[in-house]
Image (cartoon, rainbow, N blue to C red; front, top):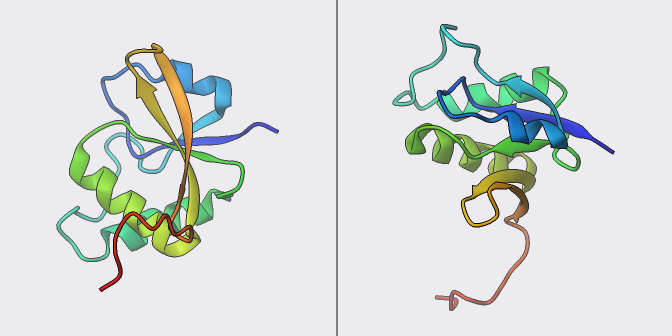
Length: 114
């Protein structure tokens, strides 16, 4: 089942290859007024916008593309809301987007308990 593919905001990077995973949508359109990344409510606004666009964490994707700070804030807010999300990251080796599942409920044991 093809899901939706969400990109935080338009970028100069060619993201057309992400379309093979589903219809591309932007969380924030080019030129749209949005909460500043320095505002504590930025992550909440990302989650609100995704929910308004029927984001489904089981079948939809979030593309890791653009500036690092808003991406990290967005992914942190998404994981706080849904615990598991699918992301697309561009692999320069494979020269295509590869899918990954981020899951904050899975304990790997890599970090010792304190």
